[in-house]
Length: 223
Ligand SMILES: NC(=O)c1ccc[n+]([C@@H]2O[C@H](COP(=O)([O-])OP(=O)(O)OC[C@H]3O[C@@H](n4cnc5c(N)ncnc54)[C@H](OP(=O)(O)O)[C@@H]3O)[C@@H](O)[C@H]2O)c1
Image (cartoon, rainbow, N blue to C red; front, side, top):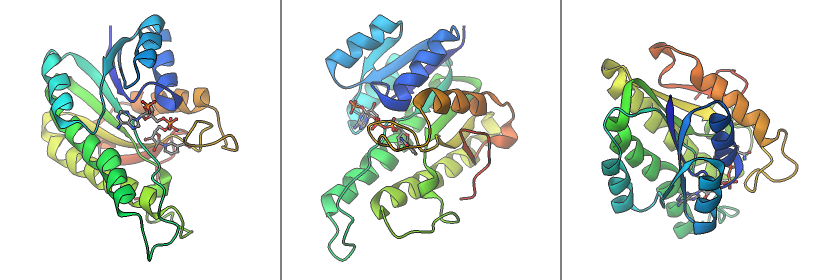
């Protein structure tokens, strides 16, 4: 039975990925922060793991609790949309740093810590955003979120380079504009469409795809 660890699985895209991988017969380990979310994940058939991704010691403890070479896939989905960048002359420094801590530092650390838990040929999929693409940038808004996902993209590419000789893949993924708490009710697609597309992109084999940036519909995105 293939095994996936989904970090940030309490709601939104992460929760739907849990549902779909379980429906496909995978063993699913899923992280949450609020106890009620852990209960719901367990009730659905996942193995729930409590983790705040900003907590370095807890991240290390999670990695230490996993059997080496036991996971086919890790999905680093947890993320935030920091506010406070409306006036770039007076940015909210704490909000900027929190965005970088949760969207960049935390997934970088988790990916490196969780690497020994991956099976040969395993994959780490990072939930990025097309808003982190410099090539696609046409507006001047959301600079905190955009810069955090741009920095995450550099992390993905760097880890992919470092892991290439070991046969491990790192992917940057854009889930679409999705109707979740973060995406809002006006967004283009529902979580089911996004998660189904992401699963298909992740399942596409080949080390040559590592260190690249794909949207949920399979399109490759420029950095
Ligand atoms: N929705 C979109 O249109 C869209 C577009 C592009 C990219 N993305 C990216 O896709 C990912 C998922 O987005 P979403 O729309 O599903 O977001 P969401 O509905 O806001 O859910 C965010 C998830 O991240 C978790 N999380 C946040 N901070 C965390 C922390 N410090 N420790 C552990 N978990 C934490 C949340 O857990 P709690 O419930 O405990 O808060 C929740 O499970 C994010 O990385 C986002 O940037 C989304």
